[in-house]
Image 1 (cartoon, rainbow over the protein chains, first blue to last red):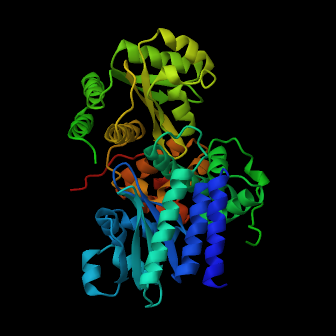
Image 2 (cartoon, each protein chain N blue to C red; image 1 turned 45 degrees about the horizontal axis):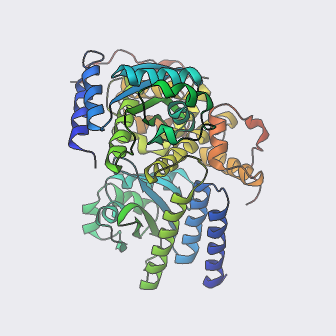
Image 3 (spheres, rainbow over the protein chains, first blue to last red; image 1 turned 180 degrees about the horizontal axis):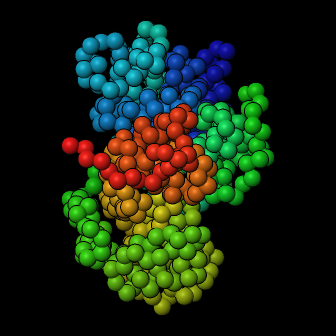
Length: 246
Length: 238
């Protein structure tokens, strides 16, 4: 698909989400997938700062636990932390550069081990404040052009708007309330991955694939369905164990 | 960034061994947050809650009322997992909390702010701030209250097991393991997290490592041996 067509698709999705009651985590997951396609990167994650100014993973282009853990490693070191603190993008960071591995001794080897050669971090800005970052990884030595960086910033802004726009909650009066709710939803999702994986005796990644396929097919919000499962208010036998093709 | 006042509250909270200093800490917290009083209630199942902190009668009466009626900012925050901020009770549509709107008129609470205490689907309780006069919290006060609610959550969940988690709760794998253990042991999520922490403590390993083993199915807490989840006497680590 041409970039223009892909961009059009993103805009359609964004417009839809801003009209309807939408699921934030699922939206950000899809947005991360679009970032991967549009920017020609290998992986993308959306990180949001919590009340302690610590970055937490809200969504990623690939839900596998290994990638989530790699983003989680950036809570105290790595390009996303630098970007969050400075408010400026950090692009085309060469992970094989010894200076980089020295600066981020835990993050760099973990990223290299996952097959990533370079990384980028784009700030998510809200009225002069930075609320989180978009993290991008590349497996080839390719770089982000200036145009790519501008597009990445636009996508990061879309993520910010979506977070503040979520209407899942009738009474989220404040931005802080919305941010906190988003982070809580993410944790519920992880707890439910564990519940389903153990019930079905599959991996957490497989459990999530089946869960998401069911939620999408039945127009359930991921966060809402996850909360019902965690509270024992939903019979999970209704969910087919193997994910239908996506 | 939290305020110096809240940093002091958290410091006192850490040093506090239980009940003696709680009243003073709670009063200091209320002052820092610019409210007349506050309550902390612990969830005891369903919509019920048990009062743990209460600075004064006005805050206590309001808390009693909303949990007796099962409606209001506190019960709503506990149910939804999101903060509920009401700068002026008089401006709330009566249909939002019908019974409360009638009963609360006689109480000295004009502004009420409730912050959920919990980790994901684990609901520990709720922190409720009460002020006699109408008006919003500042952004900094909201941030302070969130941090306090977070600290109280850790305390409520971890009081039986010493040892720091560090940043363990940032890791998806800890939450996944919590879910798995809850099914393995047929216990609630908070109990599952406690069992995980107890195992980490008794085996002298970080919570994230233990969680990774559970998720990878190298460890089950329901099998006997050292995986039974009960903290065994700690060996001398010197």
